[in-house]
Image (cartoon, rainbow, N blue to C red; front, side, top):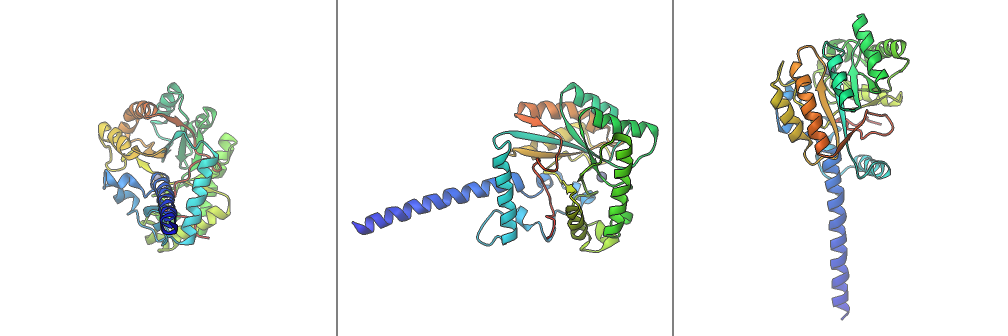
Length: 302
Ligand SMILES: [Zn+2]
């Protein structure tokens, strides 16, 4: 009798353990998974570097007993964060890098027509038309993010101080033009890029990431690539297709797109991308330092 009861308790524990394990695992895969855009078009890596970083192992593996304590607490925080806010909703954060460009007005028109909020990770441009675009982005309710003033890898990744100077230079311009000083950032090439090594060595991204975090600037990578960097001008349908495939089974998506003169097909693909994501049940939001799902290939080292 006793051994039967012992057996059933053991069985119940096993069921419970596997259920917990499954939940944690699936959450991590969905929300903090490795940059899955590589699955669709590998050429993207040419520009953004391979998805490896010494600190990102927690992102590419599911939670297990071998998970280092640091990774576990990060994952736990992520889970807690999701439980607190919008846990049951699907949210899409559209992001446009490298603008303003000649397409910015059209992108803004499309977003306005579709009642969609987005985030623009801009670079430093001083022409009047560009300054007007910084202002329009803010006036129309979108979020301005810092993508460095020069976007010049050999300059910004030379040292932490050089990076900081470049970021600060753009923040001053943006604050002067819009009254808003961005507190969010996207690293040119993403936080795990290897192109920076040439200018600043292998530890440079970790060093900069640590410093930015210390200063209260949040950086965001992406978990859905539109693949529009895979060619100078990728055909429209491939861009739409990449977003469809890369967003599958994800509730929080940060979509990488480019606002550059040569990216004519990104603008053409945008209405179709928005229509698709709306049909899939996503709401659209601008990135927010406190609130948003934070996708980071490289976790800021302590
Ligand atoms: Zn860029």
